[in-house]
Structures are given as structure tokens and as C-alpha cells.
Length: 218
Image (cartoon, rainbow, N blue to C red; front, side, top):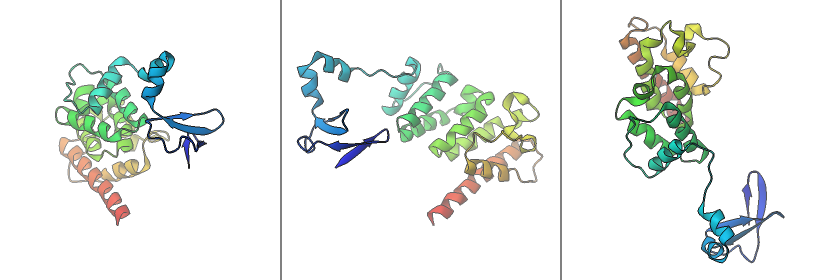
């Protein structure tokens, strides 16, 4: 029996493979040994320090919000900056806690939403993040909340008007999101750029994406 870490295989040492320990030690010669972390911490102050402290290359504000998120706490977004929010979402992706990230997005959507809190100028970057969580509903709300403010306004980027797209406009957006968003802009009875127009684009976007995934499931 073996495991892999960072692409390298490690074979369980037969004397330790059946251990019920909570810690796996990976050796320099490609073996894996299961043991009890408390045993190491009790026996050695060095291991106690190593196993009791975790150094993460993230800001304290993002780590605080991340811990609140995975503990499923009610979060006050009043003083949370966009940089902290984005860093926390990226932590949810990096540490494979996407469901908790969806919980964070769900909480902010109960109030003003991501655009209401962090501004339309961050709409495109947030929209690019949403496919990583498969979060169609937040994407729809971003479309509705950014809406007409973006028309002929370079501050928000040219993504919001497909007629202005350049070659690299959509390079950061996942393909199915691009396809659904593009076709959601098909002509409607509403004046282009109006509130009703963007409501319709948002609703079409959701229906198109749901149609894609319904087809895949079938």
C-alpha cells in the first residue's frame, strides 16, 4: 500500500502501516510511517513546537476570516476589505474547502452581495473566481449588480459589453461561463444597458449554465 504527496509515491513501512496514529511521516527514502502525533510531542520539545504551530503565508485578516468561515460563524462584513475577502476565497481553493467558501459567499449574498460590499470595479475579478466554486447564483448576482454602470465606462473593464471584447478579454474566465455569458446577451425586447436588460442577461446566463449541466448529468 502506498500514498502520493506532491506527485511522489511513498510506500507504507510494513511495521507502521496498520498503526492507528493520526500522523503520517514521509521519509527521505520514499517510505510512509503512521504514528501518534501526541507521542512525538510528548517525547520531544522540538516535535511539540513543529506539530503545535502552523505557519501560513497569508495575512492575519484573511486567516481570521478563513477560520470563521470553516467554523461556520456568522460574519460581519462591514470592515472586511476586498483584498481580505479575495485572499480568503483563494485559501478555500488552495486548502480544498470549497464548500466552506460557498458558505462564505452565501452569507454575503444574504445582504448587499459582493458588489454591494466591494464595488463594481471588482466585479470581473470576482466573476472569474466563481467558476472555481461552480457558483452560478453569485455569478448571476454579480451580473445584475454591476449592470448598467459598466456601459461605456472603462473603469469596470470591457468584459461587460461583448461588443468591446479584445483578444485577451476572456482569457481568465472558464469556457462554460464565457459561453453562457456571451449567449445571454442575445437581443431581447429590453433596451440595451437598462436594468431590465441586465436582469434578463442574468436569468439567461443561469438557464444556459443549468442546461449545460443538465445535459452532462443525463
